[in-house]
Image (tube, rainbow, N blue to C red; front, side):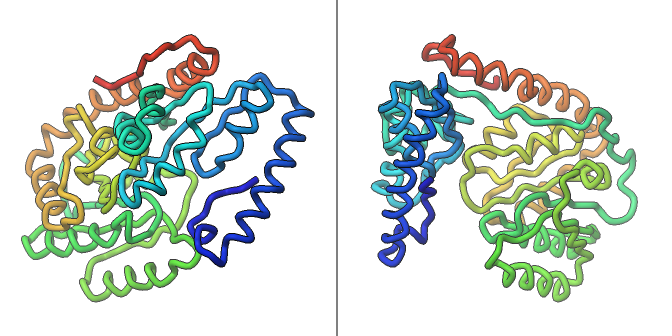
Length: 323
């Protein structure tokens, strides 16, 4: 099937785009004829042919939009959302995503229904340290990319050291292919700053790393549609410092153990780390309640039930919102 990639939108990519579109239409049409599904569930906006194919086959199409394309060309953003206007129903993963759609294609936003992401949790989270002795343990969890801002965590640790607060950083994640230069830049930054940085790589099991940390930092420079990583930190009973933007702000909303920092501002991140460390006893006392609330909001069984209600048409102009 056609998968919309930036490189296909450039003139040299047009032959590939056209060929993929034609092959996708033929093969998708045949597949729907063979399977004859009751519904087609489309989980991303970058495979645009499925809603149209499903409707032409007189089949229900459910578009689940996880991408909040609030920045960039409005024309391009509208083009990305437009194929999903023909879907029978539309699910979005946050209010921020819904508003982003509304800025580009209001009719689709009005038809959308919010179902917050389900987030799997460890059954037995390790309690945080009672006393912060030695270096503060800061964890970054996610792709190593400039957009995500792991360099800001290293920079914040350097500023903490200047204030007499030693900190060690763990970067749990890897780069996309073609971004190896950025990892080298991060390694050079670690050496130059003198900060102890553990490049832990990618691991499916994130919970041991959260257990070994004092705080989780989510420093994205750009808007994100939601913040599963934020919820994972709360579920692990760790305070979380989150970039004050988009869906990240929404994911962190209402938790006493989550603090917001100005986007692209290592100094503000360092300030929030100090604030949490100075308020450590109260923070430790609140992590259990925060975890219970995260379990209530994002339990996988609740997520599945919400999706099923939309697919089966049992929800009408109704949204599932966090308080």
